[in-house]
Image (tube, rainbow, N blue to C red; front, side, top):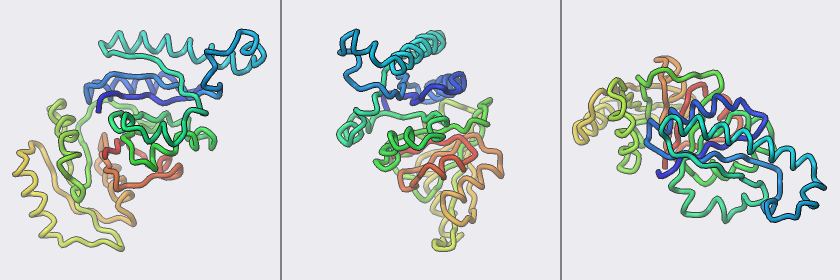
Length: 259
């Protein structure tokens, strides 16, 4: 990943997405791009002054968003993080935009307020359908320390492992919880599962780890329930886990989905 994109729309709980963005950028050593999802047409800045004046509500939104982003940039840069701002026009969010290879190297942090409006959610839905990197931090959760990171052991692979290790290595107090999951439709042999995970830990010289076998109605609910049970701080999902608007709202812990 090369960039963290904070995806939001106003009105929003702006302070929280700034705080969460700073935390995540430091965690993964990423630059930040502020992305304001706006109603204005993508050619807005090339319109004549009279054309913009003829759309007073859009103009007011643009001015409000610009002022908010300018203030946010000062806060983020004060933390020593490179940051820039960007207007994300809804009429530019087509299949070509989301399908660009550039999107595969970006991590989107989704503002929870976007999920409250069907129109806003639909504009960014390709993030979930295209298996892009994204993170979601529930409104009620406030980061203090990163101590317990939960990940499904079944999908650990060479692509996701470096991201897990990066998080663990940058946070010496963090423990990696590796889960073997059982659901009504998928059952693993407990002994074989544990031995497989132990070999994985040994092969990759992982530090603080804990192996658990957990049951749930679905793999996604099992991971989330386990994280709630241990009061985990962060869940790492893989692209095999699918999401929709309802599932995103139901998850109670901050999480990142990696490809």
